[in-house]
Structures are given as C-alpha cells and as structure tokens.
Image (cartoon, rainbow, N blue to C red; front, side):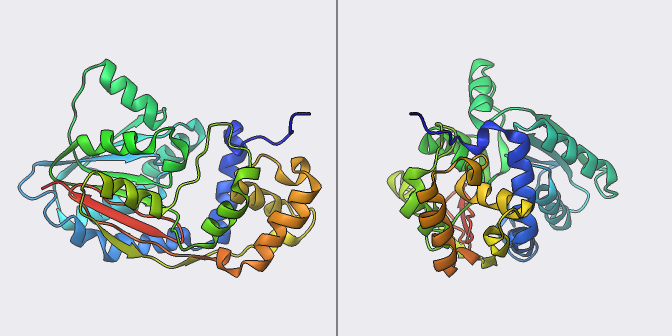
Length: 301
C-alpha cells in the first residue's frame, strides 16, 4: 500500500503557514538581520563602486523581510545610488505580502522592484529561451536550494550572471546543526516527491571546491523553540513538525513507528536541533548562508 505521506511542498499555502510558525519559534531572521547589518556592508564594499545603479537579484525572496534589510544595507553603503531589485518567488501569496511590505516602507524611492512568479529553474529556462544575459551586482539565494533539482547546475547558472566584482550569497542549514542530524537519521523516511532535497553547508562546500571557487565561512548562531512539537493537538506544534520534516500533516499521515519512536524522539533527544549556526563562504562571486546557520560568499574577480 502506498504511503499517505507527501511532501509539504505539495501545498504551498500550508508551507507558508508552517514557515511563519518556524520564524516565530526561531531566531533565524534576527540572526540574518544581525549579519546583514554588521557583516554584509563590508562584503559588498566594492560591489557598487562607481556605478549609477546597483542590480540585485533575490532568488526565493519570500515575503521580502530580509530582502528589504539587504536593500537598506546597500542604500547605507551607496547613498543616492539607484537600485534595481528583481525577485524570483514561486508563491503568489508571498509576492503579495512582499508588495504590501514595499508599499508600507518609506525609504525605497530610488528602488525599482520587479517580481517573477516562478521557481529558480523556471527563471533559468526562461532566460535561456529568451536569450537574455542580464548581469547582476549582488545575487542572494536564501534558504531555497532545497527546492531545486540540480543544485550544482543552478549555482553555476546564477554564478554566470554575476558582473565584475559582484557577489553571490547562499544561505542554508549548517552541517553542524541538529537539523542536519535529524535529516541524516530519518530523511529517507520523509517524503520529498522530488520537490525537496536535503542539503547542508557541507554539500555546498563540496560543490564550490569541485569548481575551484574560493570561499570563506561565517557561523551565525540561531536557536529554535520546539516545545510545542510535544504538545498533542497543538496547532503550532503540528505546523512546526511539518516544517521540520517537510511532510504535509506529518502527525496525521506518518506511520506510528516513525511518528512516535523516531521523529519526536529525535527532536526530544537531540537538543542540537534547538541550535542553528551559520557560515559564510567567500569565493569570487558567491555568498552562501545556511541554517544553524551557515553563510558562504563568493566574489567575482
């Protein structure tokens, strides 16, 4: 009999709800904000030098909270310089929230926004079919590489879009996080439906090493409160458990042995899951950030 378990990505509206609970229960965005405010300006010190406009591409921009913080940091480094910010985001709901956030902001007069409701792979296919070769000064890919089919290929593609002195920032889960432990132990039991691939900073380092890109890693500590996952019937707990396992309605559809003996037990025993750190690697034109959290930056020479 086929398993009733299916990927959380088959229901984008529930995925977004799960993600919002995750943000409420973790310090992820606070950690990212600190990185953007304290580290990013230095990393982008030469990116916009002498330019009349700075081109930024957000891959998987979500609802725009971190994107606007990045734009604010760029504005502070290059006051008065126009910014062209394009966003690739497959969720119409997230794009709507992003637009609402932009409309409510008061410091974006010199910023032009363009949204593309599509995945990174769809964007690549469209650019190639239209034979477009737009170059970017800064590309960031925050927590989205789990949802592409060929990670090395997508990194190579976006890296190829970088202008001289440009940077690519990738953010995803750290190889030292509890999240990594959970997926290493039980990932084969979770449904991905070819929509989700678990990947950590270790995989990204391997990809960068294989193509000879130089990089630097920044570890950015972050924590998550998973207490609600152990309260039967707790709505936030169910949504957070879905997010952790990338499984639609995990508690309803997971077999008892997985639900009782593995995942909840693993969450309870592995206190590291509550901790996330980040690293950033710095090759020419690539910036990478991950959960626990880790961040890698590459730069185009």
